[in-house]
Length: 492
Image 1 (cartoon, one colour):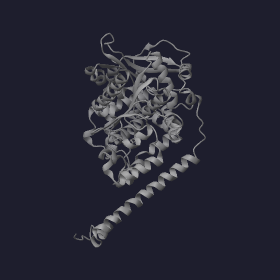
Image 2: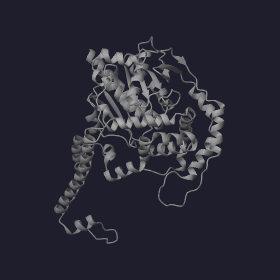
Image 3: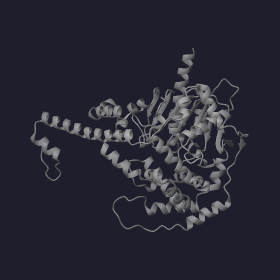
Image 4: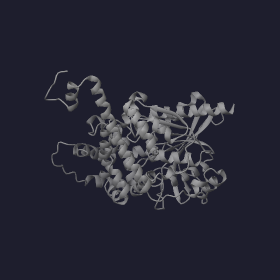
């Protein structure tokens, strides 16, 4: 080995002077040292969660979940004031759209001081976004497209819930009807699934299965009424969505979710395993056992041949991943600590709302690249984003959504959702490589008892329904087929 003093590292220096077997021993000790540092961090976090988390007693629902009669009664308690299901069409008032354009025209976009490092979204791309929104984006055209879907509203408890409901036209044929509940994230909307739904409607037909799809707007997002209780969380949402499926007369169903939709889907599967036939997600929905995960991670770190390369890249290089999470999750701290402050700012300024969502949309779609490229600002990309932004801004409910986010995150960190109830229903996971909140298969197996499928996708990120609708829809279909085949074999 030749020494190049200008680019020589300490490891190069050691390797040059030491025998190869001693150098390999040195590298092994170095790996163990790094792993022990990781262990100490995990251990400290574990101690904090044990001794400093808030007192968290299980609710009656948690204790009664295995008693079918009691759980059904509790789910129907919020259904006392049931009213008829009403057809619904989106019609945003002209005054709101005029106000939106007026605010966009008054946006103050001052150039920042020159800085070579990445400091957030660029002024150039922000101007392109606002110009497109003001001059080219046609909300009425998008509204007309959304109104082609069968939309309804129904009162569940004190919330007027908006949802899509796609019924099968083949009920009288030999096709097997599969009810499927799709739950979006926050921030997000039912429109996130607009390209997935048509694929789902046809993808399983050749296997004798046809989906009947229910896609609600979560309360406080889009066209559903905001929750009236102060601590509305994914647990409350799971009860409301179960009541919705009751009203639609689906005694058993599959559920798919991403983001907080994935957390809600997991709660429905935990609380009502006799109702949920299977759960499919494309994001992790619970914290794994820290000690067990650490031991397995240590083994994988030393011997990476044990797992898929894409799964390995979820965690390593550890330093880079941790730095990326701290750099790109600042909004989490603000939303989890001061949702009102954050929500008021986003509600008042459509430009702020758009740039916040565009930056997060881009990062979660391309986690390795902070800077947005000009070629990414396609008309389709901007239309998808601005449809979501317009729905959120015109509904004037961003603050309520931020409160929902805070409560859900609080429950996750306190491990409220995993306190007593195992997740026993069949589970499927679609792993998209640019999803930053994901667990490798060996960790996911710690959070569920029946992992039927874990698919490593070739591309895509957090917004898989918008980015890769075909890959996502086919994986949902594959998962449902596997569970259905198993169920059929058990019956026989």
